Length: 199
Image (cartoon, rainbow, N blue to C red; front, side):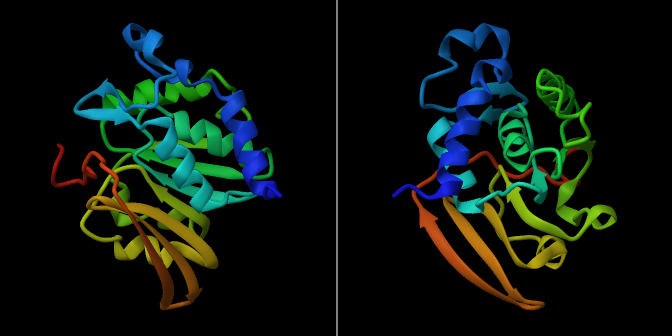
């Protein structure tokens, strides 16, 4: 029997049209299962990867989620659809042109106006202490390790999904300083952009 969360995730993917999140010249390629360029060396991830990561994250109605590197805004909108009006997505993007592009895309679904999504221009690697703690944390770009600030800002019982090198990792916070960790290898991601990489 299909898990309830899986059904909710599938429904969100049906409602949030990937075509609304790609550059105009790539509209015809919106539904192919491949990453597409959104400029600045960044991509909108392939649908399979986004579905895999969201499934690992297990977002639920009412969750408060910290999303790092929202790019096109597609994954942000999917998460917003799932968490609903009682939830909140704090989505951070480091690159200004992508912050503007993604924010425009998310606005097509009124999630910002409804107060479900807050988009932030900045370096997420230092965490988001002002809005912490979070039920879930998800990063869309690959780093060498999970930043310490993110681990601190996760609620006990919460989970974090992040690409590290060519694997996706799931961290579940068991206690203040203890995590269970699981690796899912065989993926490819753009690198995480931190403050020292961009002016």
